[in-house]
Length: 166
Image 1: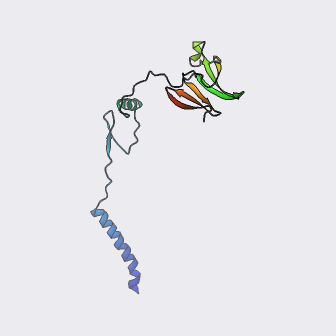
Image 2: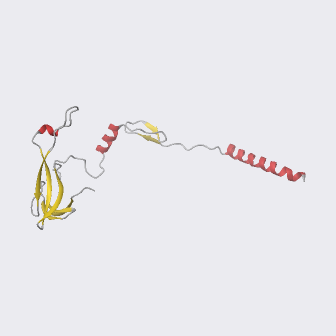
Image 3: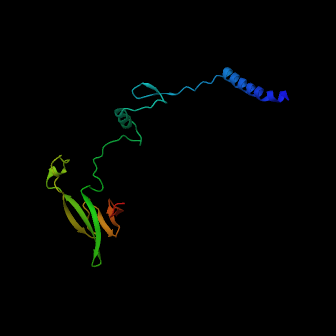
């Protein structure tokens, strides 16, 4: 009977001795962290938070060729000039109309950023009621007018312009 009382402490002692021996024979070392080199040439461990310099990031993005060509500013006019909008559509006597508003700039100072303390000038708009066959301010021709969208021809291709923003 006395032997059964000694089994647990003996097993616990053997387990602790085995774990201690394994740790002494095979010491646990942490793996070395990889080192990265930044654009400025300094080396940093990857575990440390890296806060990149904004100028370096912009320079690196401009130097890279992500899409196979260098980034070049385009002088082409946008397809939809920013000074006009489709306000709505309506139908009268079986004929559909599109209402287009175009910003009228008679004072070039109105395009400048607002000055604190000075009320901005109120914008002036010119409203045009266009029908099928008429030209939009951007040069596209209206092919069809529907309640939610306009069918237009732009550069020889038929396109669909939504009347209302989503």
